Length: 457
Image 1: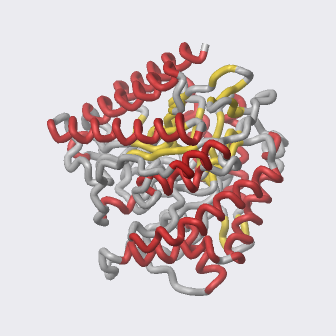
Image 2: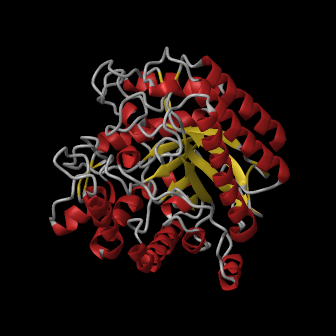
């Protein structure tokens, strides 16, 4: 899930980075490259820098459907019926991988979802967890795999800032309040990053993750740590070491230590599943490739991720086919390639483009409006994944943002079975949603998965 606030804050312009990694950095990364996690039975594993499933390559174009546990809530009228229909639709276009929210924190923030899987510090919402049970059980029937992120650096699902609030009692700087200045995203990010320095906050986080790992699915009886429908435990959505200013460089070792220790904690309890950070990549690493490498070189992190947001990052003002779009799309390709080089040659770990998206032409939200620029962009990203897989390089999967399916903006309440569109509550609904009526987009996704299936044999 992306840092959806970015359209409302000014980012530093990304400059061409020449990978200023010192020799010692390369050596360290090579020494600590991912340990083999061979696929056993139905579990997805990593070996020799490649995903594998049943001793064959595992390549995919999947999606983000963060609200799966919300649709699966047994108290939501029509929710489970819609979830079944959505999974059937996704199966028909070859989707085998879905990124899901598995941890959210009830928060007073204006842009946050009103209800989290954690209602309080140690108070968990059993109905939403039963919703996750149902979603995973239905995915298992379809041989789908889930990437489960268990918290968030950003505000829209509560996130790290809410953990800080629970243990300190302090008020979170709310970036979505109209009275807040534009610069208060800086204050929010500083507040959120305090999570890494508060042992009590990490203790609460680990308690929640531990109960998920040990949880018995109430639908099919599977204990989560033994469930092949789970591919990955993801530490959070887009965790960052802090703000983008130079001072945060001093905090990188704190963040890297938290990543390493938390990933090891998860592996100790669950040796069957992969672990990743959920990072945006270099963009979320102070715009520095060496920070990205430093944080991800631990062998406890099995693969790495990159997110790519043309509009949110200010690379494209108006989503339409145009010279401006051509420039932005080329820039996106170069950005993903930079991560592919690092993952292939330095970290020796698989890479997933796990978030990328674009609004409909001219930033319309209605399903009947054109998607020419989006379709072209998707096609380029899918081809980049296929080219990497064919060449034996690190980029081996992509999850587009986001699946809206039969959800519709403005139809029903945002938390109703019809109102959930895939866009988080702090953003216009339908902004980046792929709807079930987007025939050209769905055809591209289906074709991309057929191509990757052929490459995997």
